[in-house]
Image: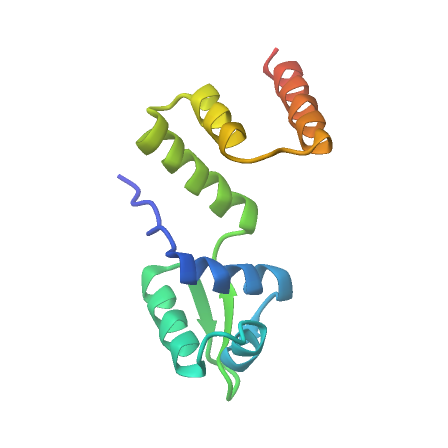
Length: 125
């Protein structure tokens, strides 16, 4: 049985966003992008994330370079799927209704949701 990767915490997601945006980065570069977090906090989080398999570390240079193991879209898909199952018992419509009820979606966002649903329907056939 394949073990799914451990889910990132909120702080780990912040670091992943930096790595997805910048690409492979040193601890210092990640720290500079997340100015509210201390250097040692970023270092410790990256070490934990390496152990969890969320990031990988390239040790060939003096300053270790970290990169995300999975692309952003795959990680987001896994997190959304997990929430869909755990919170909404697999009901995509319940997830969507609660999301829209809790947040004011712009007209453009609603149109984009309609477009995505239409595209999804076309591809299912």
